[in-house]
Length: 228
Image 1 (cartoon, rainbow, N blue to C red):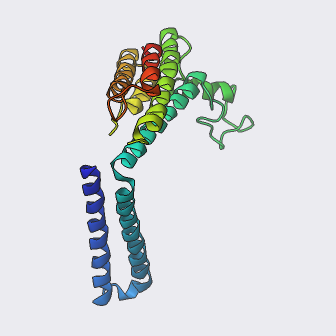
Image 2 (image 1 turned 90 degrees about the horizontal axis):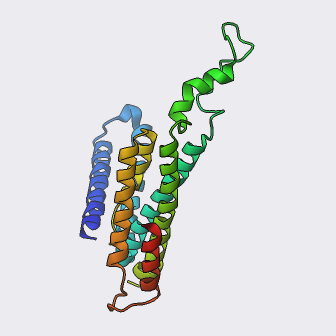
Image 3 (image 1 turned 60 degrees about the vertical axis):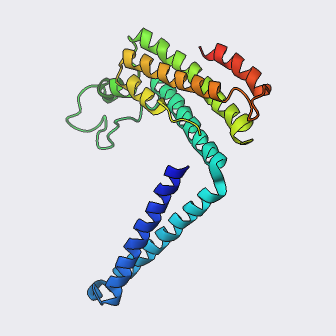
């Protein structure tokens, strides 16, 4: 909370300093030949000052639990995005449009052979999971299933813990990159870290704020069995 507050306060000072600099330049008649542009710039800076102030006020309104909810939901959406990206990559979606050059047409002179097969040959490896990587495809499917349970956990944590009273970052963003690099070993390690981190969250949040068991406690035990 303190670090987040410091970050937002620093941004307020930064944008305010920029605005003062531009106002000072206007008051001294600098940039008279381009006064309209300078005026527009100062208006933009004013808007940024308001925006950063609003963000700081919002933080005070959110409080610790609200900020934790926000961070948890942001991370949950990051994991969801990773699941969808991996699904599309494994399915080879958008292959017909990826790399398409509107300047090339089957009727153009100098274009030899089947253009669609040429495009597929050029871009297939970069835009989809190679068909001969059977084990990696299996790992993608495993990752999808386990990451969906990670999403489920963060949904439950927000509902049963954070909204009734800090959550961690994660390795979700790095996971997709490992798959795109066709690096099975790194992908497996990144998936393990992501799930391990989620298990840590489930452990920390196991009991309610009074240290007693509740619905989430029982659910988290079942979740750990499912995700492991």
